[in-house]
Length: 381
Ligand SMILES: [Fe+2]
Image 1 (cartoon, protein in one colour):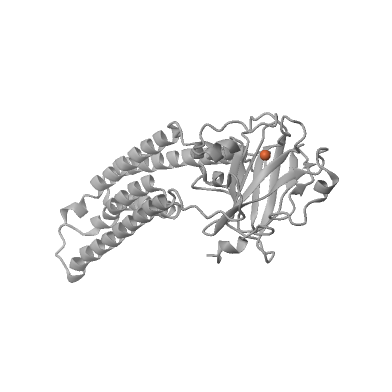
Image 2 (image 1 turned 60 degrees about the vertical axis):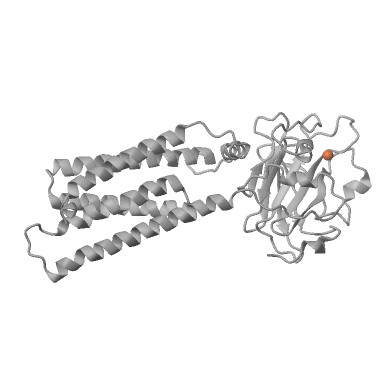
């Protein structure tokens, strides 16, 4: 049990690992972002999503993320420095070492739980390595080197060993779950297209991001044009909000052109242009796109519109009636009144300005409404 009496040495090792983790964490945070368009789109959406937090502060989701990232850097550095400084100042006092190690152990277990819940493998690995070391530093040094071994004393290492094995197994299980989560976010099976003919429907899968939010951006924040927000709720045939439905939309730019999307992999995706986006409805069936108001085609006759598609995960995909704008003079009176057989419900919206001068349109969707062969979608999973 000589190892168990080396509490100071173990605490030093753990502290150095914490400092190394702080360095690795910071380097990862400041490293250039991957070229992956999905990542770039996500960061752009985070930068554009601002949340009022009081005191006149309205940080973006990206600002909050960076703040939390560097808070973690400071926390890890502080833990490492305290783990080195306190036992040194106490001249190796065993009780001080155990209390310091126990405090770091508590913080470490809390972080271990956080990384398990949010499935972040790199810090999870660091925390899994640190946990047994800090356990040994905290509880291993209690046995007196001169004391005669008692029955209880002989049982203690066995209990400690069992605790360490259970902890390590838990950490490894967490790592495995995290790895599994990474794998399952890889390319998904494509849902069958219903409501044929559906020219270009396969474009909904072209560079479909693995991770989706109920709020997404179509045009980048610096895209020329009038800012516009599309929002709505998706309902099932019974009128209940439908969570987890993927809504896909694309439209022209401020010149009425579908600007080329060089990143698209298929013909349909390229034809849809780069002003395209996906949102997954939240628990209340809501979705939202931030974009610009599209212009009519250069011919000047076609009403401005936003193409819309729906993916019901595990079931099917189909297009629904495009968004048309009731204040568009190119709409005929009949078109402006709306089509009673519209796919997914009426697509004619009435644009209004919000208090910041942003166009807001509401396009609610009823799943399957007016879609031929919708029954081919099959049962809901
Ligand atoms: Fe179009």
